[in-house]
Length: 293
Ligand SMILES: C[S@@+](CC[C@H](N)C(=O)[O-])C[C@H]1O[C@@H](n2cnc3c(N)ncnc32)[C@H](O)[C@@H]1O
Image 1 (cartoon, protein in one colour):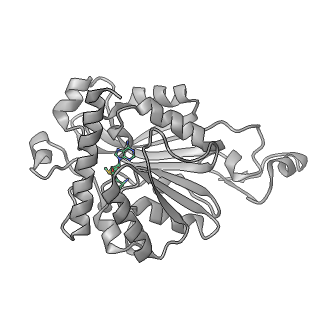
Image 2 (image 1 turned 30 degrees about the horizontal axis):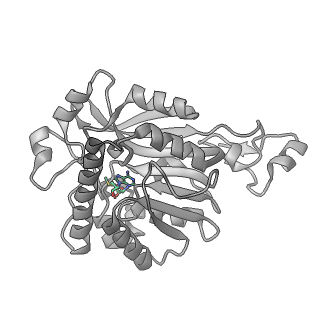
Image 3 (image 1 turned 45 degrees about the vertical axis):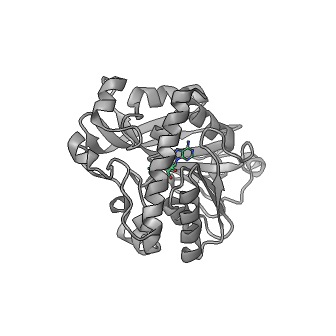
């Protein structure tokens, strides 16, 4: 890692360590996009971060401390369509909000991992998991560029406003592809830039640690996902963040090992398997498709 990359990563870690410590101490954590010194107002960032992006039902199901520590720019679970028994990984899990919501969706037979680089965030997330009574979750120290989990061990990769913070986005997308099972889904919220904005123009609109300057453009995201081996890529803008910068839902799929669609892993992101217990082999014998919208 170059000294500049190292420095940037340390600044990101310091920023989110301070946010976690604020949440642990009961003071409000500054959001992604908003610095403690009012940077957001200076740069014209228009909000759209944190717990306000979740439904009332989701908010009601969480401990107050998990909500207070929400620093994302979207709600990746709104599109991830998680099913009973699935294994989910949240990149940059922060205070754990998306891990805890996912844990309810996958049920006791599923597992949700959160990986985060910041010790203070891991402490906060583990405390929130205890308060939520979640036993099917695990928070792991690590980086999203090199996640300490096995190949093809994950059904769904989620993330909320974190990939823009990476100093090596190609490594993050390659890592997500490595970790997903064939047919696995990638569904993240992130800040994206209009294609015409160059790096300097993105930096004029917000800081790196505030989730703005490091954002990929829409075209760069699509190209990066394609290069990593993903298909069925869609990038849907959800709300304005700053001039030419948006929060977006980014979805993609790791190609399946064959064309069968009798198990959820083989269905498109908008479909579910008719019977999740059907194996790929059984589905083939039965004549194929078992997906419904
Ligand atoms: C903007 S916060 C989002 C937290 C959480 N996803 C949420 O929605 O509240 C960014 C999180 O990513 C973590 N992070 C930053 N860079 C990372 C990296 N390279 N690998 C893993 N985690 C990282 C930070 O520690 C922080 O918890």
